[in-house]
Length: 121
Image (tube, rainbow, N blue to C red; front, side, top):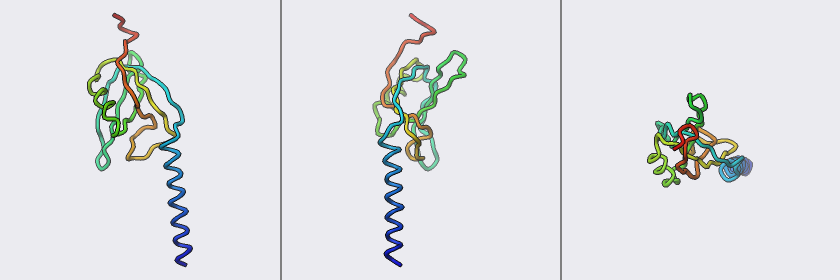
């Protein structure tokens, strides 16, 4: 009986570890998006995550929501610095997410200031 219980627990743990590894380490896609950075905040009651949004259109109808991992401290600093400006975001899309990683499947890996196509200098 004990052997079956331990074997079942081991299988459950291995399945969870495999699912976590696929979601965390294997990206679904990688890309770049540009827009006006309209929000960056640390939110959550029990689990705090960094969440943000950029507006990709003049009317604000096209909103791209994203998450930032806590280990990306330089990205978080840059996002706070570029608040309200036009930025280019480099992201990794995952198959899914866990509550302790973020609310979205899109995780920002790099941010750069960009020139708005609407207001060229």
